[in-house]
Image 1 (cartoon, helix red, strand yellow):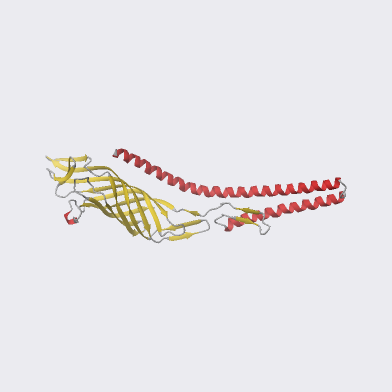
Image 2 (image 1 turned 45 degrees about the vertical axis):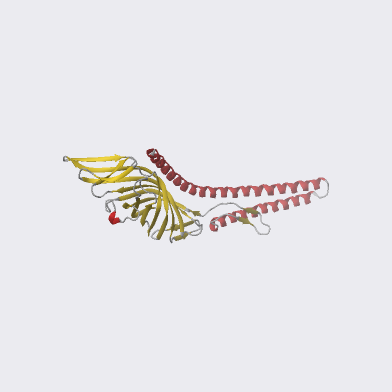
Length: 349
């Protein structure tokens, strides 16, 4: 079951990354497509202006011909009126298209939002309400997260001096992908970070001991031979969620809005939840002069659900990072050991 969970999570992780990349490309293509649609819209309006004026002129000519047939006006008067109406509607076409083209040039030159264009004053020819050009504003970004440092586990009330695990040899490593979304539209002081991470927590027992599983109980026991290495590792798949606060620099142009936290102080606080997807124990020792390496995979009565608190503080891409598992490592009736880690976190933008 844990193996299946691992591969499913890996598939979801890869798919999510591809989807974000596709969305970023699509956002640029949408801008281009929107601009093309706006130009097509203006060309269509030009054609409609010409057609409407032609229809009006045709109506006037038919009216004049009717008056001529009924003897209400002379042939010279009819020709004169036809010429005047033809010049009038030709001028209307020329002026209306000129207004339309000027409005389009003005939009391209000055209007970065492109949400509303009104043509003309009191006798305006056209009202155009269309999203023709949006300012490129990427509120959500993503990046690779890498963290590493020291790891340990303690019971309630126990100090590091009394720990059953080596302070220097017990380490953790984390690898994941995180998305960062600006919470507010016009400011970037508060961001939401969320993603998917693999956590590898290692513990090296002291005093030549290894973990032994006996039914429902898991405990440390001294090994019969001298150990060169004894390491217990737990692999977790978690979803971290953090609120991140801190200053940023704002860059705004006619067509782009961008916030950067490069070389800026950032503080993140939140937590994580997920699953234990595997545990193993590595042993190295000599038996009758022969080097022996063992990898022992077992359940060790660990808890399947993992959840805890985490925070980071730092400058730019590198931050001081700490996490604490609220869930005990082992199920009842074993010792209530809680894993915790302290190290460096790198957000690779």
